[in-house]
Image (cartoon, one colour):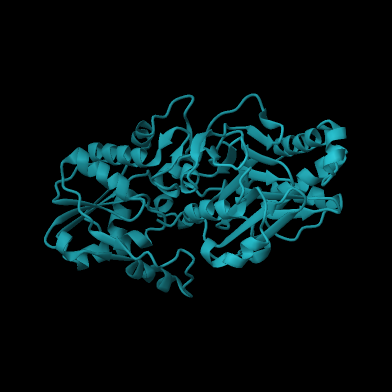
Amino acid sequence: MGLHDECGVVGIYGAENAAALTYFALTSLQHRGQESAGIAVSDGEKISLHKGLGLVSDVFEQGHFESLQGSLSVGHVRYATAGARTIENAQPFLNTFKLGGIALAHNGQLVNHKELREKLEDFGSTFSSSSDSEVILKLIVRKFIENGGKLGTSSDEKLADGGKNQKRFEDAVLQTCKMIKGSFALCIMTEDMLIGVRDINGIRPLCLGKIESPNAEAGLILASESCAIDSVNGQYLRDIKPGEIIVISKSGTKSLYIEEKVEKKTCIFEYVYFARPDSVIDGISVQEARYKMGKELAAESHVKADVVIGVPDSGIGAALGYARASGIPYVTGIIKNKYIGRTFIAPTQKERENMVFVKLNAIRSDLEGKRVIVIDDSIVRGTTSRRLVQILRRAGAKEVHFRVSSPPVKFPCHLGIDTPSKNELISSTHELEEIRREIGADSLAFISLEGMLKALGANKTNDFCKGCFNGDYPV
């Protein structure tokens, strides 16, 4: 607990009620960001946008959908890493011109956005936010204009154009993606076209699905996770490949590639913590991955105990796997108060730490007088883990054995995960025994990196970004 992913993105093409479907898809991605939400919709002639601070259900009311008419949309939920937590940084970003517009939603983080922003400002570009995502949008706009593109042209002009204008826009996106460095999953739209992009390492996830459409051809959906496709009764088709630009328009669907040589390095924490357990990312079931991590953890660090419990929500899958492998019974043990949002801001560090007592509570009948193995997904600062141990002991646990389904987090992330600085990461400044004493557990063990990779079936074609564990980042 304590790590946060940046965002969730959705794009829909060819649906009668694109905004409503995007709303439901974003709600299913709410775990990826709770600070702001937004939807941009095209009716074929103009793009309408509504966004605001808060949860999806707080930002949108029934009346908003009356002005969000159209069959093409992009949506976004945000947890800030680059850029302040203000309405100016809420997405999607929309750039409008006399004859049209472009809307963009971005999950990830660029490592060269400051240099690119300075270059754009030198060329006369102005920015309404401090977000790296707006840099991507402005780059696309600049490249499109340089290519001689025109937005919002009439259907007759498009017909006479022979698809040249669309090709100019595709080239602008491709040129931009060759310039930006870092992690990015993008959903980009014009009045009549939807584009999805995944960075050359596939660090952030993006998948494609099919949805019901009033037209003969099925509508399509792009989303950060497959659970969003399920939420609109869609059919998951495939993951967008690392470095792939998928273009969806009236002329069909096609793919371009940023580079020929790609090296897949999916963020490993998608499987540990970020993704919903009912999602499948790059062919790997998130829940099955968590079961297997628990199984490996049991093999590596078995201890005599009476019950196994998991910290809600992302520790539960690993706890079930641990219990199955060890033969020790799984019990609920801890209840999470689902009405305490992640966005709660307590004024002092002590009050923030004490929020754990409000958020989690122990079930005494499951724990009293028992030796307890508690499984969590990670230890970041150690404060939440210490409070957890206190909660379990207060409920009468005789022994508390802390097990972690990821290796020690020793390095901060610069690719879209909100992590503390290196000196705030307890595993970068303390040895295992020191951490055990710090959190007050009877024993402590982390899964090994080798065990975790085994659980995920890692190989040359199915590799992961492991920078937060070993400092080796793909970008």
